[in-house]
Image (cartoon, rainbow over all chains, first blue to last red; front, side, top):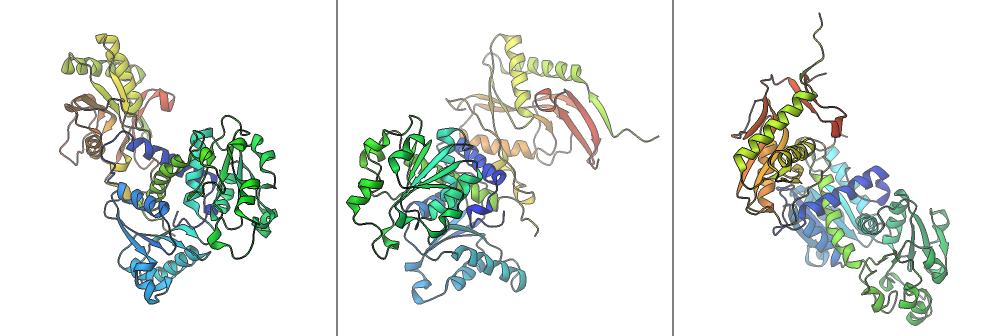
Length: 318
Length: 181
């Protein structure tokens, strides 16, 4: 694995190997006072965040530090980006300083792919030794592969396996990179994915996705082995996608009464940050079937696994 | 005449006798408190379980068994493709003040044991750490020796020692072969 740009980069054996590594890392760190492994000592990881983020950035930083890598955080607001430097120049500057891995969050879909291409071209032609790995930590409304991995890890913890399990994803599918990466990875791992959303919040190409689509949440819940609620991404909405927050919550919010329709074993996931009272009620978010903090915990372990698979072994000859 | 590709050095019965003898030695050196046997994956794990069963049989006090994966502590990670991780299972009350016996199949360069000692340090502070190996084949690269050795087998570097255990290989035995086969 050279880069992790898309959930589609992961075939079933690779995804399973990553999830297994994450489980082993969790096991290796359990019950320890010192959360530190020497595995990536001397490796340098740069996180470049051009969009606000709490959990993803902190999670990558913790993952790198627990494996003894040096982690440097660059945020667009406090860097030369504010002076007008392009993504390409910023990234190549950091790679030239010896970064082994660049973790990129960017509001433009495809930004991580562009970055990987630039680094690949530079290292092949001009500057040997400039060969940072790129991890996509969210690009616009496109992909967020490590979120898909942590959701898969959490579902595996709850359900044992994903094969044949029915996962219902509810809400703002249109603007959700979590949904896009999630559909790809969960399908690769054998789950059957059902989407529930208002028609205005479904992407036009959804018919070509390997999913079933519906608009009735209450009908879908009793048949679901797990339900994943998505945040309504107001910051990406320019125009009226639904009449009002109250109406959205009435039709697509997971209330206590609706959560009771789920089978006993079904967990409730949310990628965070949550809008309590909008897509999920406080009572459900704090109930035992909500595995939202488990998702955060698993996030650190799957990101450690990704860094381990990208950085620990010998460089693959390409 | 073409030499055979591989030669059997210990058969199944000899492996069983060797493990029984090592169990007696461990009891002698660790009495009265039974030790904690930590197997190093992959073949150290079934060996640790077999030693523990024998120790329980001979002394009447069963020995605790755990598993210690050392992959994350190897010094050659960057020379090989990414390795899969194996299981780590330690007793719930930790290893503090325990007498730990590390168990592996073959002692060669000593680098695995060095990694195991590093890994162990992260989990706690054992009273003492000892090392039990089924085969010592020489060619140490670090100042490390075993406390319990099933069989000393002097080898050349281009030879390969394979320990076979029925749990993983379907049969018991120790064979020597040319590394390039």
